[in-house]
Amino acid sequence: MQTEILDFFNQKDAALTKAAELIKNGEVVAIPTETVYGLAANALNAEAVKKIYLAKGRPSDNPLIVHIGDFSELEPLVAEIPEKVKKMAAEFWPGPLTMIMKKSSVIPDITSGGLDTVAVRMPESEAARAIISAAGVPLAAPSANLSGSPSPTNAKYVFDDMNGRIPLIIDAGPCKIGVESTVISFACEPPRLLRPGGITPEQIIELTGDIEIDGAVLNRLADTEKAASPGMKYKHYSPRAEITVVKGSFEAFYNFVKDKDCFVLCFDGEEGHFRNALTYGRENDSASQAKRLFDALRELDEKGAKTVYARCPDISGVGLAVYNRLIRSAGFNIIEV
Ligand code: AMP
Ligand code: MG
Image (cartoon, rainbow, N blue to C red; front, side):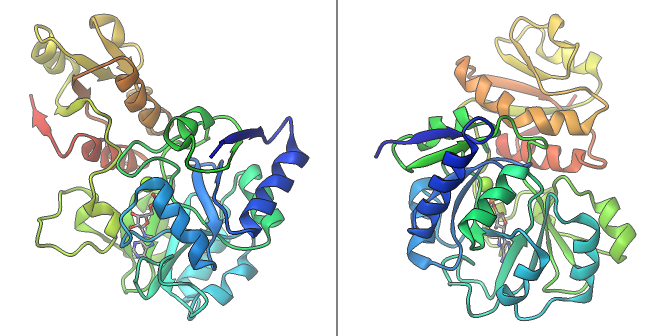
């Protein structure tokens, strides 16, 4: 299969027409969102959704997020809309927030990974919204990487993973946020944070009161534990390089790595101290780290890095999402110096 790339800004009519036509015909199209690029298909068409799992090599018990363009599109997808969801939607939709509810019968089992719940998000990105509207159906869309690889934040990285596997990529430039959405379940009480993202626990608690933070957010699940969010149990966001997250001051980090034959993943301005270094944002700016992290992980592979030591981010605010992705990319290899 030839994979075509159309530019959303320079070829808008062609991009929207072609994307809508493919999606209506049950095909998969890679689309930009403000978080990361997604692999989109008609969420209500089981055969179409199956093609997403095939293109990614994603395990079939790992459910997909359904993307909508307007709040009125939520009702048919779920058994009921909890009050807290209405409140959260009013504040954070459109935006990087995914909410899980009991599903209705229109959601095929393959979309929900066999669960009786469905995850729904309303993206903010102009391109994503235009594509949802042109397709006229809710779009199931996981991140547009091969299963296990870092999520792509630009069309080139989508192409690297998906060339020959899907017919079309819509390019709208780099993603604004750079890590995937916050996932929170409202199918339980108190609501449970399953994956940290662009909307922070602090912001959610302020609006809805107490939430629980799922154990898989900060720790590796034991083999015997059942994952509330199936995606959290799989190896994730991993470059080929072997990464170790190093907790401690810059000075301690420097002394630890200075005589090692390795690559360093550090903060902006620190790179001059090392022979082989890539940066992922400013030390006290979690949003800048989120925007850079997945790109930096792919660049490490492009540079042929084998052993990588990474500076540990602060975990408050969006930093929790950065830390969550980084420790997974490191296979939970964390040391303290
Ligand atoms: P991705 O599509 O790559 O952004 O991954 C979607 C994430 O949402 C995965 O970690 C899934 O396990 C999680 N997810 C989606 N639907 C559900 C659901 N119904 N219940 C729990 N987690 C879900
Ligand atoms: Mg993913």
